[in-house]
Image (cartoon, rainbow, N blue to C red; front, side):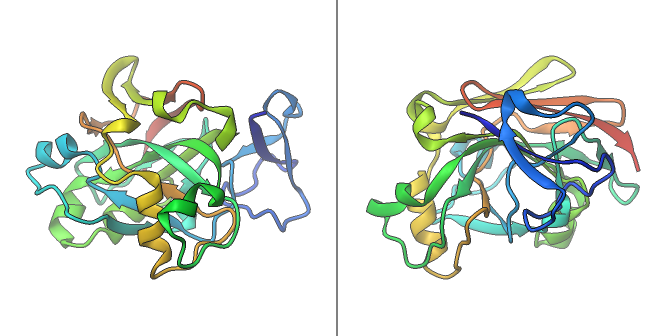
Length: 244
């Protein structure tokens, strides 16, 4: 059954952790009236895979990587379904990037690919929002990827055994117009390879979120836009964009 996390405080921070007494988990259909929907996991870190679809790498003029290209987003970038993505005044080009999110089930260290699926709790939708101009300007991606509100996730967490993984497609719509439509089968590095690679140098904790890369079709959004990331069988994540 898909699950949601929520707070009984309507103004709770979206990155509020499971240790907080006001944070609860429920079935997706059982969100109490007036509750504040939270992202579907409470990660210690958000691990992202860059350029994991060859056509996306090419559309930005980048070489296809020969091993997973890993970067981190801060947990303070998290927002939930329905929350606003804030377009920062420091950037002139902010892009959407629809992705499949993987939530880790238990501590993972030096995990072999053959055992990787045992460490997956489930899946969710992610929008890896990116200030493209700052990403290119800085050379490294911390600022361009790390603004508050730049990691939308949700609305649900769907268990790994509740979906037909091979059939999943990541679709992103901007104001109702389809911009991205890619199969998880097109990932350069599959989930087991990603978990093996990351856990070789970094301990993954229960609840950590991995954003597995975006298919081609990324593009700019503006204040007033509405971005929808849809993965049939996983959920529909929708967020408005407002000026910062």
